[in-house]
Length: 377
Image (tube, rainbow, N blue to C red; front, side, top):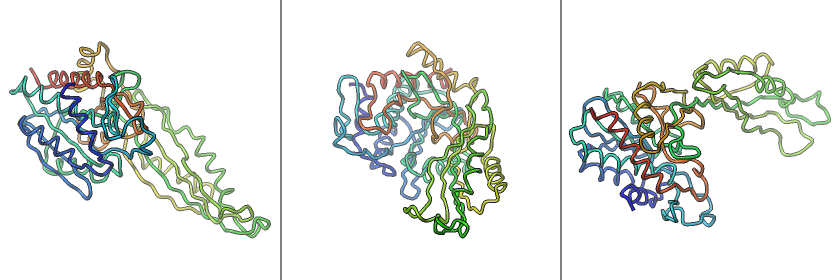
């Protein structure tokens, strides 16, 4: 097996369910230190973060990722124990195999090869690793970025190892993500006997026209980088559980996935205008998971990655902003060119999560060639 695969297995064998790291970052730091990296642990709350940098000059390429994984679900449903990092044929099985400990292993092996081949490379290389990506994401990457910004430590490029590939390795890279805005709406009525509706006020009936209007709004048409903004209701709850009581309130959970055509503030104002138009008695709580971000396709990082992919796998990846959010939403606002490139995403968070061994070796080559393209003149 290659060094990449040995590293991936060692990381996957640690049951670092979010927000636990359980020594993964120390393993990474111990590997990087002999290569000239200066390691800095940045714990916040229950979360462990690692900032490791080799060099102080610009430009700086940051490899970003997370050592925490989602729970395994029923372990007896797995083909192999989820933290065994078992290899069968070309497939490496385990929780975090695709999302995203294997990418970190590729970062590590590629960096070692690069430093040994180009010890006097220009610029800097850094690792930003957290154990709070799969959880609330409040004490992880966002806090590291705040710390770096406070001391004016900048970097120009960031490659996040999230599993971006769809059908084959490196067929897609994420050069941006949609914003995510969550709403929790509570509409008040008056509870009463269902046989005497004149003595009650049914909040379900009151909300229905407003909800229909919200569902049918065309929020925007998207743009060259993003699909149209989407409004989706995820949960509706009302009632006491019996058939003869008009409920006193209804709770609705909903989400916007929005493009750069909108701001979170504008969406909030639009929703509240609709609710006010229908004279509803309501409370609403908003939670912004992240704003949309985009890295332009003609930037140095995307060009370097495209050239690396073409030289290793024979084709260039397509640019995409689909899918959910990532820690890139905390990094891009610094001004750094930020993209995501990693293995296939078809088994992430599933039972029997797995990744191709041969793909990981190729991904290591892509990361290595990307460093050459950016940091060697």
